[in-house]
Structure formats: structure tokens, C-alpha cells
Image (cartoon, rainbow, N blue to C red; front, side, top):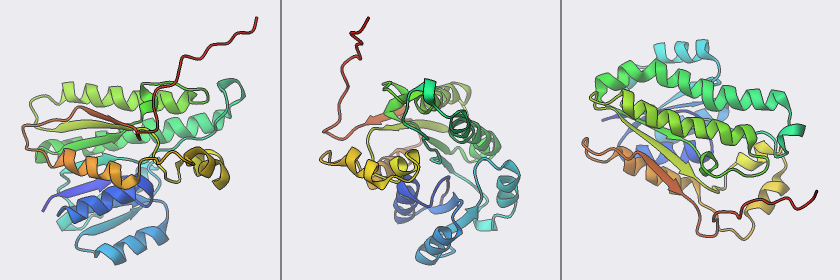
Length: 249
């Protein structure tokens, strides 16, 4: 039985990926900050299939302590799903909160890079897989995207660069790049405004976390000779915006 480590496993896409992989016959190490959710997932899936690790992905010391304490059955990691990430703020760069920018960089880039670096020796040994959650924002800018879009562009390019460096090791790397997926994402981005989230997704029929989890499971279930470099996906009702044009003087 193979083992996957999923960051940000307690909600949204991370929780759906945990469920999909366990249903697909995997063991899962799930990281998250909310103990009550991790406890509930352990109770649901059982300690033989799910191992909870409670820490913030930005806390490298806590991460290392959790990995050092993994039970024997979970020590061989075959897949890393770098899912943990967030957006903060919707305004233009000139009015943005610098602290929010730094939090996005620390979470979406620094923690992802650090986690990947930490697990690369184990993943090379197991000829495993790395799945990084990027976004269509990596390719298509929009007003207010600023640092969030930049961080996801980094994730996409880092994934492609890893493919180059890991050539010959058997390790597979994929960038998953979703459009609108209805999760807690917008609630967090807007500081807890559920109405803003409801308005954003109203009438769109957005993607679900389970849609993305199905793709992750499919990617890591391909034959060892197959690497999916990137997957970009949007709901049918989302498409590319026209170029932004300012007509003032």
C-alpha cells in the first residue's frame, strides 16, 4: 500500500484528495492546523489509513518533528501533494496589505519549496510523485490577483523545473491548475465574508473539490512511464476575460 502526504488536508481540495486517495487504496498523512478536523478525519478513516499531523506548513521545526514521529507504516512516502495555500485580499497592489502579501509568499511558495526539498530524498528513493496545486491565475492575470497570481505562477514554473532536475530519477511531477472551485478559499480571502463567496460562485456551477481530487488520483495512478506535466481545468461557465482597457486620459 502506497503512502501520500497531503498538506492542507482538513478542508476543500486537500480534504477531497485525502478521501479520494484513501478510497483508491492509499494511506494518507494529512497536515493541517485544526486539531478537531484532523481528529474527525482519523475517526472516519481509521489510524491504519490516515495519520494526522497538526502544524502550520510555515513552521519548519514543527514539520520536522511531525515527520520524525511518523509511525513505521507511514514512513515510506510515495507521493507529496502540495495543496496548502491561500489568497488574502482582493484589492489592487497599490492598496494591498504588505503583511498579507508576505503571508501568501510564505505559505504558497516558501513552505511548498521547503516541504518539497525535505521530502525529495524519500521521493527519489520510492520513485514517487509530486503534485503541486497551482491555479489558472498562474497563466491569466486579473485585477487584484497580484501576489497570489505571482505565487501560483511560481508553483507552475517550479513544477516544470523540478521535472528537468529529476529526469532519470523516476519521480513524476505535475502542476494542477484549477479555475473556480467552491471551497473556503474566497471566505478566507475576504476575511470571513461568506456573502462575498456566495456572490462569486452564484450561477456559475463551479468546480468542486472532488473534481480536483479525482484528477489528482488519476495523475498518481498512471503507469510509472507516464508523467502528466500540467492539468488546467475550469468550469464550463468560466472562460478567458477580454483584455483590460483603460479609456481615460
